Amino acid sequence: MSIYKKLFDAKKEIGKISKDSKNPFFKSNYLSLNGLIDAIEEVLNKNGLLLLQPIIDNKVRSMIIDSEKDGSLDSHYVISEMTLPNITDPQKLGSAITYFRRYTLESLLGLKADDDDGNLAAKKPQPTINVERLKDRLIACTTVEQLGTVYKGFTEVEQKAVSKLTTELKEKLTPKK
Image (cartoon, rainbow, N blue to C red; front, side, top):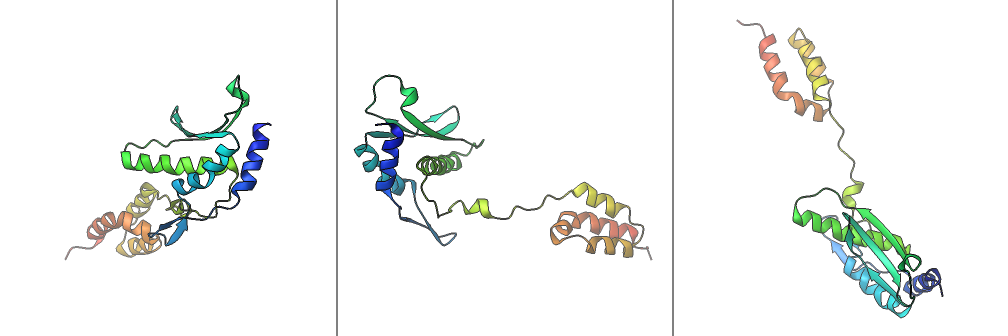
């Protein structure tokens, strides 16, 4: 039997996997890596399939190998991999490895992942602020009134980025008594 037929049979038997962990920060439930492995490993083993998740060349790999085949390994495994980000903090790197192990395994087996405890990825990115452009607009002002008008036209985030310069310019443009 081919590895694909074995994976097909295993996937039918695995079915839907329940979320087993809670994320208190996002007030959501998710499927942990341990919960995922607990749910699939016995079924994979029963079908003669071995799960390995090595880190090779800075990539987290999920490999499922047909353990009943002899000969060249090349035609007897499937793989899913993700390149690790450049992280130097060991705890953050460990978290990334855990997430990547789970995501590559879910992807490899085509499992439904209705959790998204990668909620950070769903957050809206902060807009990029071109501080130099803002400074140039402020420096070009010749009166306090003009400075106020330009400053009020900025977003709140932009105003925070140039508040110190705005205060300095206001002092320079205010007539001395």
